[in-house]
Image (cartoon, rainbow, N blue to C red; front, side):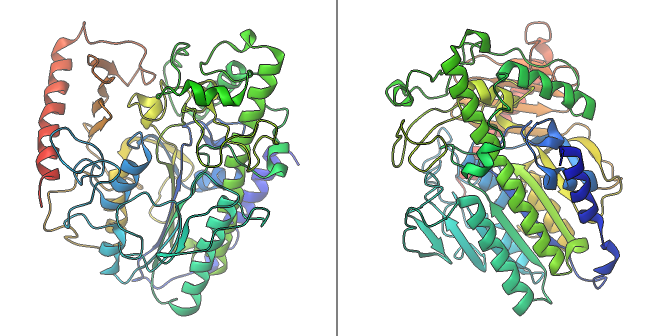
Length: 525
C-alpha cells in the first residue's frame, strides 16, 4: 500500500466512533505528553519528511501543528522546562555563570515541583515511561508508576533500568527487547492498570522515547523499508523536504545555506576513526563522496528513519489503548522533541564493531552533520546550538478545545508552556505560590488572542539567544550577537546587526536583564 493509502486508513481509524466516548462534563481531560530525543524539525511526514509517520500525521490532521515551537537545545534542560514550567537555568538544571550546583547534576529548589504534583490536586494519576534525565527519581518526584530506562545507549539490552524507582535486572542480549517497543508496552500497562483500578480519575502519561538519539539502533525489518531511500544523497533529500514544507505552509523565506565547514559540536577524532574510512564529519557535497562513502552514509540515514518509523508505530499502539479505554475524545495528546537533530559523533557504552550489521546492538553509529543538516531543515546548526536548527521542534497537539483541526499555528511557543497549558485544562489554581512567576503561557488551541510580542530566552554552554516578537538575537559561545528578522528570515541567513544596531541593543539589553533575573531565581533556596 502506498503512503497516501496508509494515511487514509489511519485517518479513518482515528476519527471512527468519536461520538461513542462521552465523558461527564465535569471530568478534566487526560494528558499524554510524548517526547522524542534528538528528532529534527523536518523528520515527520507532516513536517516535510519522507519517513512514514502515519499516526503522527493523523494527529496533526485532527489537531494542530505549531511551526514556531521551541525547546532548550539539549536533553536535560528541556525535560526540566517541560516538567517544571521554568527555564532550566532558573531551577538549577542547566549551567549558569555565578550559580553553584547547576547543570545536568543540579538539584531543583523546593518551589519547582514537577507536573504530577500540581495535577494531583485535581485527582490526576501520573505515569512515566522512558528516559528521565531529571534530578530525583520519578516516583519520589510525584509519578504514581514509572518505567525508567537510564541505559539509553543500549536499545536492545539495557543494563540499567527501573520500575517504580527500583532497579530491574539487566536485559540479556537476544531477548527481543527494543527500547521504543518496551517503553510503549510499559506506558500501555500503566494505562491498563489505570482503567482497571482508577477509571474514575483522569491520567497524565509522560512517554519519553530514547530515539532517534545515537547510537543508531533499529529492528532490521524497519531498516529494510528504507534501504534504498537515501541513496540519492543528503542534498537531494533536503531539497525535497524543503519543497514539501513550503507546500504545507510551515516556513516562509529561504532555506539556510549548508554550513559545509561546521562539524560535530564536540571533537572526538579518535572515536570517529572507529567508524572507518567511509565516515565523514562534515556535510560535504554528496557528489564529492566516494561510492562506498555514499552507501555507508545512506545506510545510516536508513537506520535513523527506521527509528522514527518504529516510534510512530508504537505511538499508534498507545493511541489504540486510549481508544480501548473509551477516553480518546477526552484526551489531550502532545508530541515534541527535546532538541534539534544531533551532529554529535562519538562512541560510548559497548563500543562499535565495524563488522556487525549496521543498526544492530554491537554498533554505535551516529548520524553526523551531513544528515543532521537534513533533519533540521530548513534551519541552521544542530543540537547544543541555539540557532533555529538546535531549538526548533515539531509540535503537534490533538484533543478538545481545538477549533481549527488540521491547521498550522504560527504562534511562538516553548516547552515552558506545557505546564500552564495542562494546568489550565485541569483547572489547577495557584500551582506555584512560593516561587517566582513561571515564564510560560497557555498555548492557544482555539480562537483566543495571544501576545504578538512573545519573549523567549535561551542560554546553553555559552550559546545564547532571545526572541522578541519576530526579532531574534543569537550568538555562538564567546561570539558577537547576530540579529535576524524571523518574519522573512527564519533560516537566519541575513544578519542585521550592523544595519539595525538599535534593535540589536534593545534585545541584547533585555537578554542581560532576564539573565540577571534568572540567576537570582537560581540562587533562591
